[in-house]
Length: 416
Ligand code: RAT
Ligand code: ZN
Image (tube, rainbow, N blue to C red; front, side):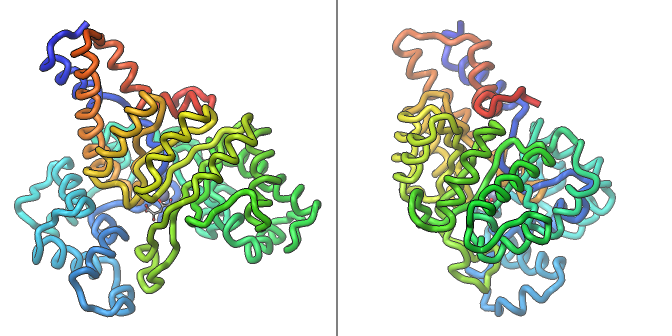
């Protein structure tokens, strides 16, 4: 048993540093998915979080910026966000953490030297290096059969790199059925616009086929703040009549990421989405009405976090996860993770990276590990004050749960 607070701190930090992470939500892909996998300094600099921040300072027209080649966009972002102002935002700092952990000289501020470093790397070598540096063992991708750039990979080579696991992402089906049903028709599913009984059966067949084809660990969707089930919308009917039964039959969770206001500034493209508060009643309804289904939920609005944690106390078929997107700032991660731990013990998934660029695994996890380790130290220290001592093995177990095992156990699969 550890009875000394400094030893406690050292052990927690060591275990958190060494744990092999399962990152349950990313946007990265194995090397053989070609251009779908973004990596390197120009991709880091043109991350949509940084594009939004660039326009805080620049008066350039959106059209002019987006017409530039990637490297010219990266040059502008570097100059504006890093040279002309100090890079203190979380996404800005992230670039510096990545360069530094790769062993590059951040103090030199030499963008060309960073470019040279990446130019000499092969992608396979670099994937190994990033996973190793980030301490990530497995990532779950975002796999969208409605994406014409991605679908062909699944129709042909598929994926057998076990570091990358699939999640079937179905935003167009739920958020844009009046258009996406035509794609299902093209792929041989007998669906119609009015969602009759035949369409419901065919959508179920489509979902089942793709869960199997990808070996998807869960089915996922991003949803607006107004998302409501039950109601008489097509979306609500597809959830209850197609997704719920298929997820139960296939024993995969339904992951809902709720709170995105799409394109509040459409000129900004991917950087133009914003946030709104979700209605917790929908989650309560789904968890209560379908106790044999599993739900994974992350909410984008900070204002939703307390009621979400409380809802997880009420429903064991609900796993809450991550500090998503606009919540992925140190002060907010700290606050939300403390709230969750004080409410749920260790029975949640504190973080995912949402990495869109491979290299981001490095900074997102390095920053989050530190915050989560600090919180664990505080919590163990509080119970130590009451006379409860944890052992090194217990710390190892708890850390493994938070950074991976909780997910694998919830989905009913073995880690790896
Ligand atoms: O965090 C992001 O990069 C967002 O643009 C989205 O990708 C979001 O995470 C999502 O999965 O929809
Ligand atoms: Zn995402």
